[in-house]
Amino acid sequence: MIKRLGVIIVAIAAAIWGSETVLPSLSGLPDLKTELLLDFSEHPVAGLPWQGHINGSEFVFFDVKLKQIFRTSLSGGELFKIGRPGQGPGEYQNVQDIHIEGEKIFVLDGRGRIIVFSREGKAVREMKPPLRLTRFIDHQGDLFYMEGQSTSPEGIQERVIASWREDGDAAVLVKSQADIIMTKAFDLNGKELSGGQFALSEPVFAIFDKGFVEASGSRYRLRFFDFSGGATGTWEVTAPKPEFVGPMFKPYNSKRSAYAVRAIFPIPSGLAVVGNFYRDGRPRLDCFDREGHIRASYLIPFSWEAPTSRGQVENGYFIYFSAQEGCRIYRLISPLF
Image 1: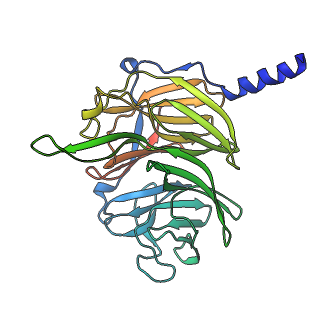
Image 2: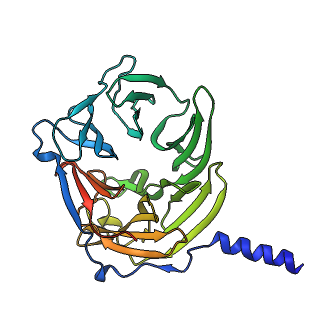
């Protein structure tokens, strides 16, 4: 009995690792220090990079204005085309995401197709998953882990993680609901006309160790899963009250405390997490070690107001995408651990 009780205690402890973490106050956070490397608004050819990743000393990106995928050196200079837009074999339409593995560039387009290109830009092969998927999470061997969208039986928006093997079936591993507010509309006489849903925040996923990390809902909580979708643990984090900015959130700021996580990025020492917590319109970035302890916290010195701007922490760089300001790449100076 004692031995069995000990096993239970260990299991409970494993399930709530990181649960004592408390985020520091927004008022005392330093700015995340960066060094500008590339400003695409000053590039003579580039339009507006909107998706992309660092690959060694290069940046591979989709230019939403030129409707073309390019690669270029992080030191700037010439843009080299990867494939071309179109409807035919090996051509892409409305690029959703890009995944890079060494010399291979995987492109997910708006038709739900995955097209593989060489570094030189030649189409190698094309695949079509059976589900409508929107983002790459990971690729291991011939198995893809990807994010998709669905709707619950109650009509609530969901995000899912699905696994798919080429020429095989897709399996949904994890489902998470968006943080929803129900809205109503009225005529001039006060009669209710219709209702709808407004998503305060969407679920977010990232790869972490030997599985996935997920955050959703109105709590600052990170949940962990293995590659089969089995739950492996949870980090419960005590967070300060949000200070929402922008037209999307102002009507709900006083009605709903959405302690939602906006983005998760794996870093060598653990996880970098962006939350819906702002000071003067700038979001916070909190860095956790692999046990869930907070190691560094900063204010990101850029706007992060969806859907017109967002950021990406990747391989020691910060990539800033903005419809108004253009795309910029920075080297991170502040330590994340």
